[in-house]
Amino acid sequence: MADMAGGGAMKSDDNVKRPHIVVIGAGFAGLNFCKSFPGDMARITVLDRQNHHLFQPLLYRVATAGLSAVDIAQPIRAILNRKPNLEVLMTEVTGIGLGTRTIRHATGRLSYDYLVLGLGGVTGYFGHDEWARFAPGLKTLDDALLIRRRILRAFEQAETESDTAQRQALMMIVVVGGGPTGVELSGAIAELAKVALARDFRRIDPRQARIILLEGGPRVLATFPEALSIHAQRALEKLGVEVNTVARVTRCDNEGVIVNDQRLPAGTVIWAAGVAASLAAQWVGAAGDRAGRAQVEADLSVPGKPEIFIVGDTAAVTNVDGSPVPGIAPAAKQAGRYVAQVIAAAVQGTPRPAPFRYRHYGNLATIGRHEAVIDFGRFTLSGGLAWWVWGIAHVYFLIGMRHRFLVAAQWMFSYLTFGRGARLIAGSEGDVRIRPKDVAPMR
Ligand SMILES: Cc1cc2nc3c(=O)[nH]c(=O)nc-3n(C[C@H](O)[C@H](O)[C@H](O)COP(=O)(O)OP(=O)(O)OC[C@H]3O[C@@H](n4cnc5c(N)ncnc54)[C@H](O)[C@@H]3O)c2cc1C
Image 1: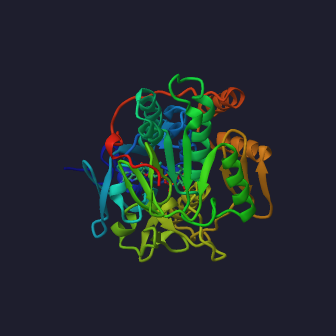
Image 2 (image 1 turned 60 degrees about the vertical axis):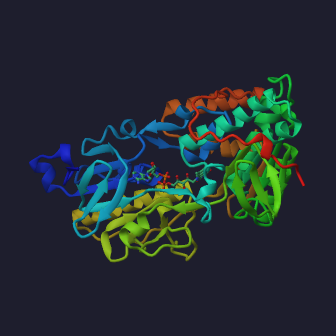
Image 3 (image 1 turned 90 degrees about the horizontal axis):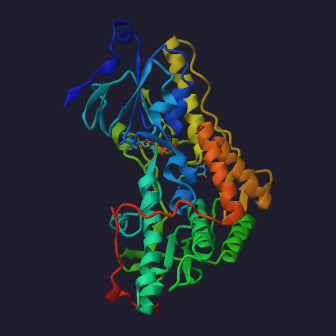
C-alpha cells in the first residue's frame, strides 16, 4: 500500500508549507468546492472512483436512448486542469483514520489538513438489497446503460418470442417510485416504446407495451403542490403510462414484482423509489438521519471535527429558517462553494463566514417530450412553457459549450421527429432474463 502522506507527486518545499485539502467526490458539491476555492493558498487533491463528473439530472435520457453517455459526462481532469495547485486521483475511498488525519483508498493513504466529503448517495432498497439485481436504480452511467440495454433487449426478445404470455411480460416495464426520477423515466419510456420504436418491429407492436408506474404514497411528485401532481399524473396517462398510487412493492425477482399482493410479470423493472447516503456519516462517527445522511453544524463541519466538512447529498442540512435542505444539484453546488469560503477563511486566519444559507430556486420535473411541472414556491408553472424553462435550465447547467450544443441539438432533433438516436444494445453485464416457464398470468 503506497503511503502518499501529504499528496504524493505534488510534493515540494512550498507545497509542504501549504495546507492540504482532500476532496472526496467530484460531483456537484466537490467540483464546485474546487472551482471556487480561491488562489493557490492550499494544495487540493480530489479523489473520485469515476474519472468523470456526471450530470445526473439527464441520466434518464441516457437510460431511454435519448442521449449518449458522453453527452452528460465529462472527465474530471479536463474540468479542473487549469488549477496548478490541484491534482486528481481516480480511486475508491474506503475509510478515514480520524486520529491520524488520513484517508484510506484503494491503492494507498493520503493525509489531510482539511477534508471535504461529497460522496453523494446510493440507491436505497429499504433493506432489500437483494432486489438490486432485478430492479436497477439510476445513479450512475453504468446504471443508465444497463437500464437502456434491458429495455431494448426486452423488445428484441419479444420479437422472437412465440408464447403470448411471455411476450406480454417482456413488453411490460415497471418503474417503482413516483418521484421526479420515476415520473421522468416512465414518461420517456412510454414515448420510446409507443412512438420511437413503433415502426421498427414486424411481429410485435411496441405501442402495446405496458409501462406501469408504481408509487407507494397517494400521489406522484409528493414534494410538489398537489395540483402539479395531478397535472403530472394526467400527462403521464396521456402518454400511455399506467399510474398506480398507494402501491406497495413487497418483492422484486426475475419474474417481475409483487405489488399489493399481486404479481406483475415484467421483463424490465426499474427502481426509482429510494436514496440512501454514502458511508461518510459512519466514517466520521456523525449521527445520521433516516437515510444515513450525516448531521452537520451550521457551517457544514462535522460536530467536534472542525477540519472535516460534509457537502451535498451526503449531509442532512437544516437551513437557517429550520427547513431541510433538499438533495438536489443546486443545494450541493451552494454547499461546495460555501465550504470553499469557510476553509479559505480558516487558512487565511480571517473570521468564519456566517452559517450556510441555502437559496431555493424551484423544483422541476419533466414528463415526456413537451410537458413539465415547476414549483417556484411563490407560483407554479406547467405544460409546454414549463418544458421550455426546464430544457433551457438543464442545457445551461451542463458543463462545457460542447455538451450544451450537443444536448440542445439532440433535443431539437427528438422534439421535431420523436427520434431516439442512442438505441444501441452493447455489453451484457448485469443482464437478468425472466424465466419463461415461471411467468404467472396476471391475477
Ligand atoms: C436520476 C437522477 C436525477 C436527478 N435529477 C435532478 C434534477 O432534475 N435536478 C436536481 O437539482 N437534482 C437532481 N438530482 C439530484 C442531484 O443529481 C444530486 O442532488 C447531486 O448530484 C448531489 O451532488 P453531490 O456532489 O452530493 O453528489 P454526486 O453528484 O452524486 O457526486 C458524488 C461523487 O462521489 C463519488 N464517490 C462516491 N463514493 C465514492 C468513494 N467511496 N470514493 C471515491 N469517490 C466516490 C462519485 O463517483 C461521484 O462522482 C438527480 C439525481 C438522480 C440520481
